[in-house]
Amino acid sequence: METYWTTINTSFYDINSNVTTFLLRLEELKRKTQFFWTEGVLSIFDLDDTLYSREEQLKNPLLAENRWKKWNEIILTELWWYDQFVDDYYFTWWITQEFVWMVKEESSLILTAWEFELQMRKIIKLWLDRIKRIIVDDSKEKPLALFKHILSKFEKIPERIVIYDDRVKYLLEKAQILSNLFWVEIEINEVKLKWNEVEQLEKIIFIPKQIEHADMMLALYSLND
Ligand SMILES: [Mg+2]
Image (tube, rainbow, N blue to C red; front, top):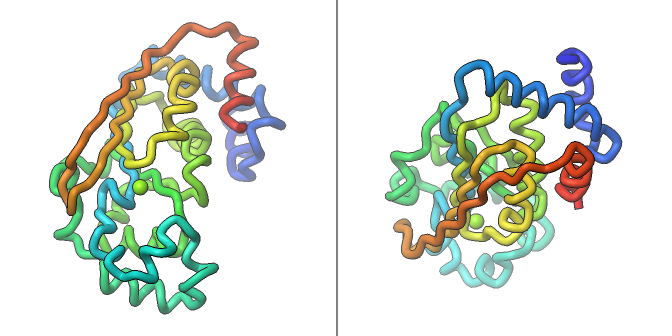
């Protein structure tokens, strides 16, 4: 089964056409988690405006105007611009004070949405490339990407999942489903940065609910919505 899973995983087929495989893999991870030690707490950090404040860069009117748009289509047509931008605005000592000591190689994950090339440059410049990361195009993809990541990269299910993000809408929508599927508590912290310090922190905890096997399939499908 593991070989079969690996084959499926490398080609990264979508969930809809591989529901049974995903469920089998999930069961396998749960069994391992039950009989062996657990992975401990997994802390997940968003990058922009969570681990790192965009306050300084948004003083640039051109960037501010387009803050929610993909910059490669609007301003940054050349990759050298990314390098210049990251050079000008990203410094390790500006990483959010309250999080800087919490981000640990073995128990943390960066979950960020934006352009892959740009996010990678930021992560490298901030010396955060020692941390495992998931980079998706859109925040909507975060819950499913997290699910797939745990299934494919973890040997056990984490004991608890703690998420920090300044835009939690999509994570909140799917957190109960993830919690039910993994059978773990998921804590979501909505953060707002004031410069590089956390100004406001809201904590929502999702407790896993027992679901029938048939509903597991539905849960998987709805992660994909
Ligand atoms: Mg953010």
